Image (cartoon, rainbow, N blue to C red; front, side, top):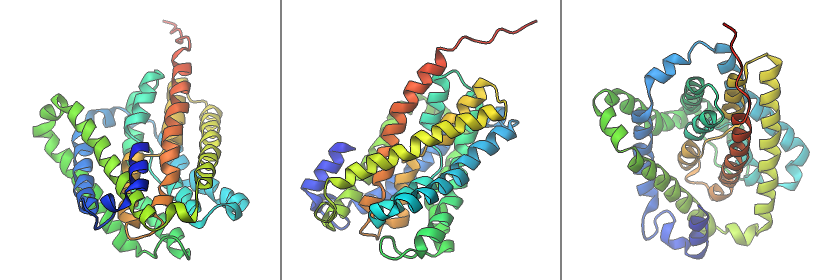
Length: 318
């Protein structure tokens, strides 16, 4: 991603919308294929096995779609005057995104947590995000002046559903016949996943640099983004652990609450940003918090996962 940002900064005309490579058209195809593969790779058996823990699921989804936006509201009230408008809206976009699927499940497995519950929560978060993310973005960011454009709620949700939910459902339906083939070639599909994200980052920053990203903001924007991402991640990690323990969850379910409730998805976030703000000159700034938060959450949560994994297993009395 860093290489994509650097290349976009040096040669923005190559990757910008309508540029030499027409990445704006390529990215739409990539987004559709990406979510088709996400649907293809999801095991419905894993979802059924973790469906009974409704208190845990309610906590995780509340953190994702209620606590995060409320934290942004406090953040905006306290620090809003020191942040550019588009960057502040980028943190709001981060706050209303779904949880990530792959890394949440991977971290839960590494920490010896409840993997089935993690799969269900991460997937449920993604499906809810198809509707809740554009709805919240339209209600809050659509009413702002200056950064993102005003959006029609119904049209925005329909657009997201067509590009994200439709291919996801198609992948789930076709998994019955193509699931075995997908499992054999999962390494290649994972590479495709990363490639689509890189194209979206490249395209977004090319448009932003072409529109004057660095001439208007400079390196100080990166410092503000790193500080803001830290202000979001560390309090949410503490809150999810506190909430799980206050409800007397066992440690396996606490791990799910911490990793699924504090994470935000880059794999779904970048396509959503492209669909929601593709015509906005501030797109490059809006996605900055997500990019930095993603890297920070991987680093910090991998350390936490190893700490959880070193715990002494509980002894069962027979």
